[in-house]
Length: 296
Image 1: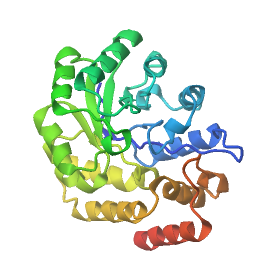
Image 2: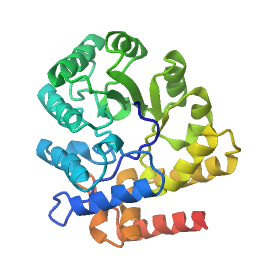
Image 3: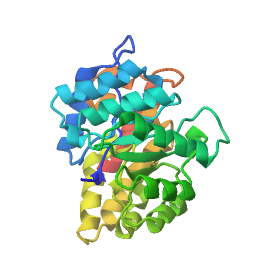
Image 4: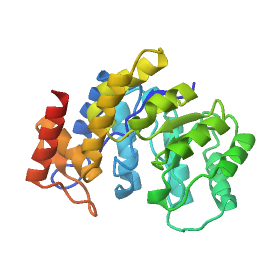
């Protein structure tokens, strides 16, 4: 079954020595599910996945499974610059029977061709060698420097129709998101921003994988459900968009973690790994106050 609904890209908590705090991670992920998230997309950009070692990334998946999070509710990020790492992470997630994997393109070399990216995906499929593999392409060209073109998506769908089943569009370009939804009916497209869900869901978007779902899972989940049922979602959309705009006005990942530190009353939640920088106390307090006033 393909993924749909709200899949927050769960932030990764660190201890004071910057090791992964697996206990806090499991608790956060369970809280997201309790707040209405359909599933979880750990090990993405918001998760600081590319600041984690391969063994730490495996630890994140294993800790969530051991902590009672069902594999069917996990879509971990498995993309990597090294093909072997992408295969290993994708195999690990698939063997655990995760719902799917979120595949970032190899991002160091710029100006690569669609042929090279096709070969990357084909070799991941071949290397995993498991009919249970479900790939959701991760499109974030402003960060990765490369992306998945419509022509490449069409070729991948033709050659791997049961394996390449969706895409997370983090481009920030609604026109692009709409073009993917319209070009490939039945392809599970997840906008990375809740700001356009009132347009995206009626067009056939599968759901949303938004960084700010870490702090507003309930609101975004209710928005998606209202849109799916045909109810008036104007107020829910406005609320979700305002909350997102408050957080994205500053440094996104440090801001989300500052809010989580306040919510969980655990200062370590505010920590990020270099090269990111932890939000200073006064800025964090102002952010939390703004969200609190907004909620009121």
